Length: 268
Image (cartoon, rainbow, N blue to C red):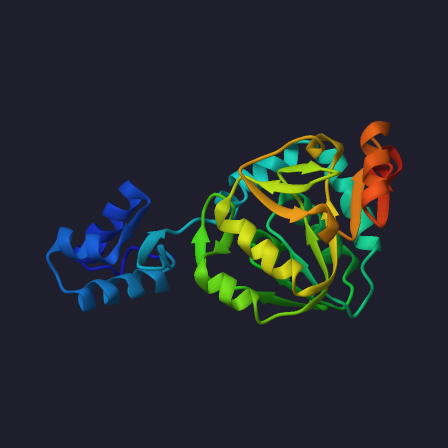
């Protein structure tokens, strides 16, 4: 990353993007009174210098890996962290070498990605999460397929029509999802309209839908209904789940796996 190779206009463009965090090509053309081709060349150069990241229709300020890990999705790792780690261990043990799987962009699947990378099984993993991609890249035994698209800084995922189009091209053995809210008699709910469609596509392109849901997700609902309970084959939850919810869950889902918190986390 270097500022020394920038001309005056490129420095001004960078300062503008720094002030706004993101800018479109049209916005930059108007601001600096230059052609679209000139702006695109300048953005290409700034991206080459790792000062900005190209987005669909513009650019945003580049972030270091540490900055990315301070994103909202990473911050959620600290919420019910013990439960998520315990669930991740159970989920990782449910994956066989050689399988093709999908991981969504949730904080629970991020914990699962860390465990998978540690185990270093030979796997092919499809994901649209940049954080998960970075975790999995620690293992040379894992083949990573990233679903391309527009970067969403809130979830650190690639989303949008291109991502959905790419998702239609892949079929996986097991698809792992978490959820914003879950009713064991109804199904799952999400707050993000940008990501729930990708989940629906991958769920229709897999042999087994596996839900990772700690006990605090039960009884919660959110903006978008994602899966009917009939679409979910397996639920991995934690030992904090109350008996009433467990009875309903076991009546509606073929397989329920319970992560024992103390034992699992001690071995993480």
